Amino acid sequence: MAIALRKPNEIEKLKRAGSIVGKTLQHLQSIVKPGMTLKEIDEIGEAYLRDLGAEPSFLGLYGFTGSVCTSLNEVCIHGVPDDTVIQESDILGLDIGTKLDGYYGDAAITMAVGEISTEDEALIACSKDALYHAIESIREGMRFKELTKILEDFITSRGFVPLRDYCGHGIGTKPHDEPNIPNYLEGKAKQGPKIKNGMVFCLEPMVCQTSGTPVLLEDEWSVVSDDGLRSSHYEHQVAVVDGKAVILTEA
Image (tube, rainbow, N blue to C red; front, side, top):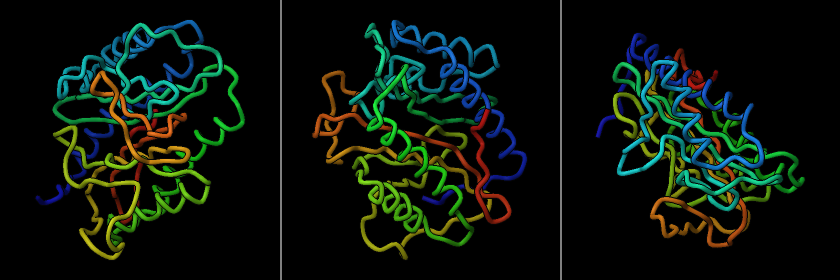
């Protein structure tokens, strides 16, 4: 399948959808505190992004029951909002998708709940720093697999490992589109499609501590590492403009 090349007016629409994601994540990060439930956080996030004019694109997507993926501690991605109460020293992943005028936005953060350990700070910093390092490395003409290798090399250089079987992705008039962008390299970096101006995609380093082997929990959504340890996830949506990446999901 061909990777879509977006026109400037389409990129602007994607930026509007993406900025609402960024604003909602920023809002949640400013108000989340110990004692809140995951469901409360989800409801606040949904109300906020609706007030900004967007629809929650995750709600009902593939059967998902929330608007915000709330991934607590060991859960790396796709955590389902429920009545679990968050505690001091937890870490919480928040992943949000929007739809606005037929175009999609998607981004994620992992945040500290109160004071956290230096180990958890390093874990969160790895996923965040890997994301921004990869974004800064993007150039027109490089291959997506080269970008994948950049992500993997950064994660392992910090002493962590990428989650396997899950990946970043194209985005536009669909919430998930070509190409898939793993955080670990299979095959050779100099193979596969090249990055071109007009492409829009999400990078999302998913970072585990000792094992990247995923385990799907009983809710059939939440993904953890089989090492049972805490994990971290960051994501931005970018467009390639004038040969380099522009972030579309900043507040």
